[in-house]
Length: 416
Image 1 (cartoon, rainbow, N blue to C red):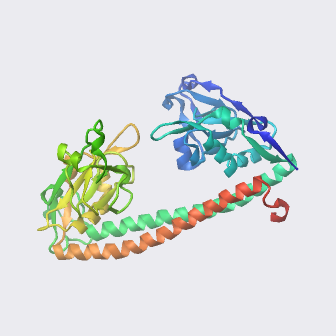
Image 2: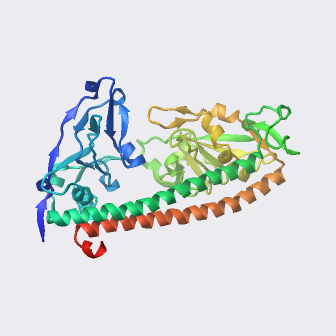
Image 3: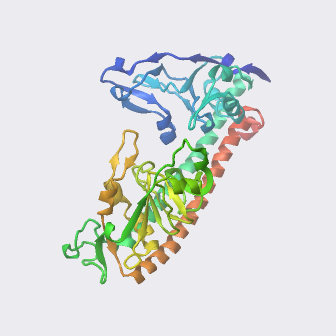
């Protein structure tokens, strides 16, 4: 038997705010959206590091994100020995007429997530915010408390199995990505220390620099071109056919499309210049993270915004294909040059980057290295793609299982 009740009839909404300064130099267990995206949990933090008001909770509450609700951030806060605080972007629900764990799974069901997304009222370029009162008035079907308990136990057990399998696959992805990076770095450097200023300094890997190889500062073997933003007050500059690439487009090895586009008039009237096919594109601001330095190749003529640079290889000494793999292989060296920002991203001082020493094999060997990496890394990427696809299918299976269980579409007794 099921009842059709509003969400606010199952939970007591709470919003008890606290200034983290009240905890002085102590520690708190903090639930925040950035940490949820990273760990699916909260973490211990110094109260002095929290700059804004938080919600104080005691444990046992269900936390549902009202910010960008399509991402499905739901947490079950557990009691802690430390004070527990949560971001004000969470809706805090204390179970009242519902089994606590069933309430947690109910908030993850597709029907409830759809209602939360439907309640979105405030929208900006990157943020959607659900209207809490509208969401809490949503009616949902719930079974008896005994059935809720059985369903919660079933979902705890079955989702833990799926989560364990996903975790193993994610670990395999990490190992393959480490292998991928190692293959590229070894191929383009042959063990050379990229910080060596001259060939006479010696190397450690095989005892000597490979015959015919040289070292050069990057600025001597490439020409660079920056980007900019056309005047946004001129509508006729935007929505044209010219690609205008920014860091958010740097998700593929070859860039032949972009989210934003500009017109030829914008190119003619501004400092934005065209970049030719085959140029190697790098990000100098934004999307450079602790272990990420986006590199791609221009697949079409395009333009760049101010956070990007294009590098064109001097064909007498450097192959464009080798340059692409070289910059990926020297990722850790490049990242060591970056400056961190207050938002966790990094900025690459472009002058220092161009003064970076790079190994230069003969052109014929550069082509062989590029061909080898196209093949070897292609195999690794194909395997990574299959594993990521299997994780996506497992995640879909997990979501479907939760929805089917809490809505009574599967017989929990038979499933057990």
